Length: 82
Image (cartoon, one colour):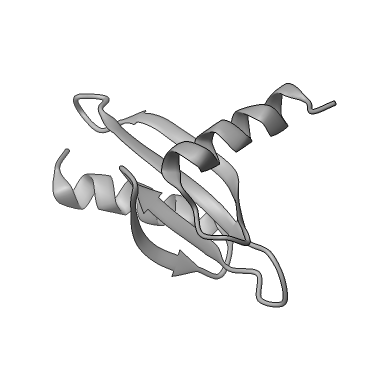
């Protein structure tokens, strides 16, 4: 039986349609001034452990670690002024 977090992550992955071999590590919701921006940080499985950053369903970039991806989200929100 799946835990709540595992089942919730499966729903997010299905909604976002992550590429095969990626799983959701962290979901950030209600970002920006209007609280209408969503971001998802995913981790690639396999040999190379990279973290992908998706903002509103679009892949922004890949990062070496989760902290870099979280910092990039904050910078992107600030830069775009949303």
